[in-house]
Amino acid sequence: MYRYIKRDSIEIEYEHLEEIAQVFPDLEIDTVNYKDNGLVYDILIVNNELVFRFPKYDWAVDDMFKEASCLKLAGDISDISIPKWQIHHNSFISYNRIKGSALTDHEYEKFNPDQKTLLAKNIGHFLKSIHGISKTKLHNAKILPSHTAHTYDDWLKLYDDVQQELYSFLTASARDTIDALFRVIIADNTFTEYTPSLINGDLTDYHLLFDEKEKKLNGIIDFGSAGIGDPATDIACLLLQYGENFISRIVPFYSEIPKIIDRARFIASTYPLQWALGGIRTGDKSWFLVHLGKTGNIDSIGSPIACI
Image (cartoon, rainbow, N blue to C red):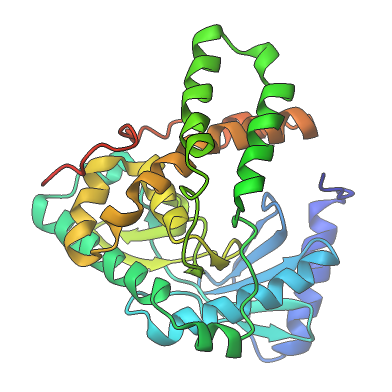
């Protein structure tokens, strides 16, 4: 459980501005937008152009360097804008803000067919490029495992935890649905095997920024869950957010999807269970609500991918 003593936001903002002034003495600050609702970072947006991120915890400093390595490697090969970090005094980050709005599913539905195809092409090429980075490059860049990576035993442990901690709150039909989901991996212990790749690990709507006027993708932010893991995880995130039709549009630009779609469906179906466990264990009700409104449909494992 995260333990963070909440201090007065004005006090924290002032301290961060002092740190910024030490590194950028000539920076003229006209506006500051302070966001303290991040789970791991305090965030200051200065002059609507520069983003500064300050780790809230000592352990988050190590994660900061881990994320920086992933961003550098992905940024070298991606055609999509992603943050270009600078780390200062080994204690905070700055980068140029990538402007745009969260690509929610209801905003996506406003796209015309050509705009949807262009978005699918952009995302497909991005995933193909990062998932295709060689083991040698990953090793040389010292990329660490994503915290989203799960072994077969991890998935069985999740099932056991769900049974022990959640089943007493669920209806019989809900328990039956979960049992059916996990029977897939119990029947086939190779189902969850994958080729380790660099993944983003958290491709949710508020990390995909689009230009509202042009209806095009401006950039991808937040690689806090990035690292070596299962490429199906990235598809699972998109699947839960936008549904099967969205994924089917990406297939022509990333031909590996049909090979991993069933694993993505399985992973996506476990997310509500993982969030529920987080809420039960921490007592933080936001775990139950943070992803409220996701409407992506997930087909049954074994279903063919729809053609668009």
